[in-house]
Length: 246
Image (cartoon, rainbow, N blue to C red; front, side, top):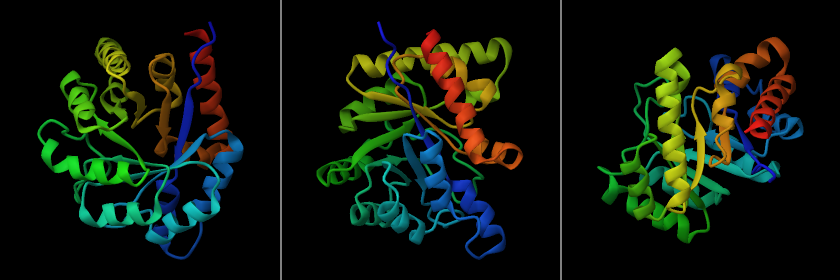
């Protein structure tokens, strides 16, 4: 039986971070998106934060108009971000938690506690033809809440697994495997992301109930040493090898 294809979404946020450190237009995250597509990315992910610390509004306009790969817009559940998403109609919108003081997304969305707040966002995006994903912890209750909200996709936050080692990493991996299996059992498409590296990606890529990985920071960091195309191809090769051997 042929293994299910595993997609790679490349997050270009931190190309914009480098650009914004000095101002001007270089390096251009949209050009990075083009290069990612040529290197084997199946889609492009960009997080338009409320404080615009990396990706800008103009970046989103250009990504929608100039890139022929699906755009996954990461967004907080705010009226401003909803208006922007509805105005541009990206292929997908991944709703993530967001705190202004955090360096990066620190954990999954609370789909249980935030159910009533999230419901109108999921409904309006879905009605506009945007595929909604919820970025959540690999937790059964969170998965069930995502299903009840009507989101067709979940992205599992795998940061704890990536940061751990030894028996602790193995424990996190088992939790992710269980969550991905439950997602498929209740009819959710399951993605994973946050913190994945060359060393960490294999066991996650081998989980056949996960169909997409979204990776950014490591790829942009690795590109400093090997180039963006090489860093993406290196990740793609590791993902494909792990899925083939699963």
